[in-house]
Each structure stands twice: as structure tokens, then as C-alpha cells.
Image (cartoon, rainbow over all chains, first blue to last red; front, side):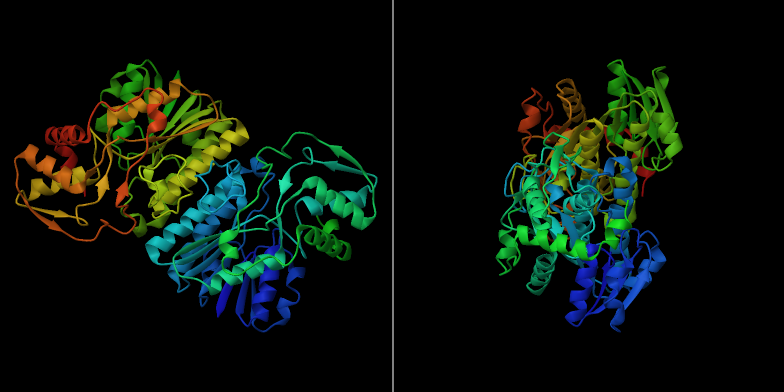
Length: 318
Length: 318
């Protein structure tokens, strides 16, 4: 089993690489290191079944070389910066939509026919049905990020229909765990490091979020791959529980033994396009026998522990 | 009222231009003339409220000039070649997805904030619910064309949410009428001109299609614009009836007084990604008081009459 992992030096990608190597795969990792970290691959790089290529998915010749010989592509590379999409609208188009098109075309030119794609619960926009199943009513997009991921999903589906590809589309909630390096928990931890007495919270703190622990996420992906029936398969990935932003703040503060003043910026959204509630119906993936082993609370605390032990991650950003 | 019409020299675009001029609009027409016809604009070009720009939506500076001063953009330009999408996958990405992104960005740089977009019933893939309402279950794409139109819809929705645009998304069935220059009726008419004794039919002829007459389509668009409430509005556009490909063949042959042998290529799809049945629930647009004035049969015959009077359209293609 030989695969390519795009976004291999990212949070989820590097954890996936480690797992695939442990499971006996030959893995090529591809990353432009724009947000990925070479440090996340230090274990993988010691394996002779791992090969790393620093490249960008917009550079077609390097990408084509990377795909050669792989039968499966785990396409995780993306602009995952949901919040600042409106400041640079071309980024989601280029790094998500066009990059995914390039991956599919490189696969078509080689023998790779199986693609695993990290989509997002954001494609449901402000879902009318909660928890939201995969067959929710046709959604209206509320963010450039969601729109670009939806565009990628459509491309993958059309390649499955038109070119006989096998596609796995996973719509993630937010993922937490080791090597997590953006989002709520990261921001809160970093802010509390700077000022343990005060924490600014975007929105009113009542935004509900459903987080999944990264190893549970990878378990789910590998479970789905094992039970494939060909064609396109779409799975929500999340937990059956959710929390409010205020809950995760309380868990973090309790763990760190802090009691900061909370300053809310107000409003039910953290920013324009922020979804006040993403909560996915994950019956389909649970039907394959998968269930998360780690609760949201445990995931938050594991993440904070990791950040405590890896403060270089905080210092080198922003 | 000043507007830009992209795809102005196309089948629907040129009919829309004529109507907007008749209604008193100042109209800039934009077309790269790749499939559009300058002849379709002969009436418009005699108006001093019409200005034509030959340009491509991938050429950003020309596009920006064209958008300047417009408050509304009717974005109809597209690669509408559904059937041959698999032969050149980049065409739908470039001419639909990226072109639409360029239109939205040009609008953002100017004062245009209202966009009217021609989407397609193909975004429903092989719909599980028939007739298919706008809130059908989250569809799976089956063609690169549908996938690219879905990508455009998502972009428009995200610009409405993020930048305060007003968006009108119309999901069309196939459109028929004067200046129609591709699709079933066009192909059948051309084939019968070449050989009145035999007609090759892709698929088994039982593919069901719901056609809408072009002037009814334009009426619907203008009706929706009048009753706008801001934000994103999505409307299916079609008739409450449908026909089989075999019905339209019978109407054409009856009108032309021909009795060809029908040779079916077989299968329930005309080609890979062809949808055996697109039939839209148009209750939403009907709720605004609109209804089609022309039946499918009348639309087919009007189209054939137009082709008879404009045989230059047949000769100059393929």
C-alpha cells in the first residue's frame, strides 16, 4: 500500500502519516510548509518507508512526481484559515479548489484512483437540521472556506462518476489533540500565557462547537476505508456531544488553575461567517462500528497538555 | 439602472439584453465570442444604451472596466458544454468557477453589489426527490459542469454573507427558444437536415427532460428581481411538465413532416454524467406570481421554426 499525504506536515496530516507508517504503508508526504511544521515529521522522517517532498499543489510538475506510484491520495492540504477568508478571498479558491483540481488531474495522469478528502461541517452553512446528517437540506454557504470545500467535494464526486475514482469525503467538526496549532483552544492558551488575568472571547461565548480528538478522527477515516464499496462515500465525523466556547474556557482554566476575567466581544458569532452551531449527525460512520474514544473535555485537556509541552508552537506564530 | 450582462452574445444572454434594453436599462454586454454570436446582438447594437465589450472573464483588467458603473451583474457567461466535460476538465473550472470568482472580485472592487447567476438543475445530481425542490437533500455531483456551477453558487452565497452582496441564483432546466444553438433539439434538427431518413438518438430516448422557453425564463428572472428581500435567493426555473426525448423527436418530426428511422445508442443515459431525469419543483418562483406562458411542445416548435429561419447557425458549427 503506497500513498501520498498532502498537508503531511500539518496537524492532522502529520498524525495520519505516523499512523499509516505504523500500519505498514509506504508514505510520500507533500507539504509547502506554509503552515505545516517540519518538526511534526521528525518521527516519520526516521522511517525508510517515508519520503518527504516540499512542494506546493499549484506547482503541477512536482505534484505529478509526488503522485506517481501511489494508489491512494490522502488530500489534507488546505487553507484552513476559516476566520480570515474575507481578507484574502483568492486564498480559498487557489489553495482549496484549484489545488484539489490539480490533485485530481495528477491522479488521472497516473494510476492513483482513490482519494480521501478532509472536508468540513462548514459546508452545511447554518444548518436547519441539528444534529446535521449528510443528507441535510441543500445548504447555503456562509463562508469562503465552506464554499471552497464544497467546490472540492463536487469535483471529487464528478471525478468518481466520470473517471471511476473512489472517493471518501469526510466532513469534520473541529479537530483537537497533539500538534493542534490553530483555533479556539490554541488562541485561548496563547492569550492566557500572555495575560493569565484576562481573556478576550470573540462573540458571546455561547457558540456551540463539537470537537473530535485527532486520533479518533484518524480511526474513523481508516475504518471507512476498510469498508469501502467503491464510488463516493461521504461521512460526517464528530462526537455525539457538543460544548459551548464557555465550557472549553472553563476546562482550560480549571486545568491551568487560572481564573481570568472574561471579556466578551459580544454577538452570537465570533466573526462574519462564523457558525454559531456546528453539530453533526454521525450515525453513518458509527454504523461501521466506529465510535470516539475521547470526550470533548478530554480532547481539550490533551491539547492544552501538548501545548504546555510544546510552547515553541506558540512563540513562532503571529 | 445600469447593468453588465456576461455571456451577452449567447442564447439566453442576448435575449436578456434585448429585454433589458426594452425595459429601459443601460446595458454593457460582455462576451468572448467563443460560442456567442455577434449576430444575436444586431438589434441591441443599434441602441445607444448598449455597449459591447469583447473580452474574456479570465482577463481581469477588461472585466474590471466592464463592471465599472454597473449596479447589477447578470452573470450568464459559462462553459455550457455539459456533455464533453470529461474531455477537458479544466474548462469548467476556468470558465465557470474561476470566471465567477473574477466577476465577484471585480464587483467587490467597484460598486456593483447585485449578481444574478444562471445555475443549473444539474447541481442536484441524480436527485432522490422529484420534482426536486431547492431544499432537496444535499446532492452528490455527477458532472464536472454541475460541480462547477455548484462551486459558483457557493462563492456567490459566501460573498452575500461576507460582503453584503445581493445574489439571485437560478437553477435552470434546459432552455429552448429563439437563438438556441446547442442541445437535443438543435442536434436533432441538424441531423435531420443532413439525413431526413434516419436519426441517431443518444441513450434509449426515455431520458425525461423539462424544458423552459427562453422568454418565460427571462420573465421569471425579472419577476424575482422585483420581489427581492436582499441576501441570497435561490430559485428553480422550469415548467410543471416534462417530456421524454422521444416526445420532442415526435414533435419535431411532425412539424417537419418527416418519418425517420430512429437508431438508439441505448442505455438510460445519453453519456456519462447525463442525468436521466431533471424535473424541478418550481413552487417558489410560482409563489411570486410567475408562470410559464409557453408549453414544452410549443417551445420545441418555436425553436425548430427559428432554426429553419436561421440555418446559418447550423452550418457554422461543429
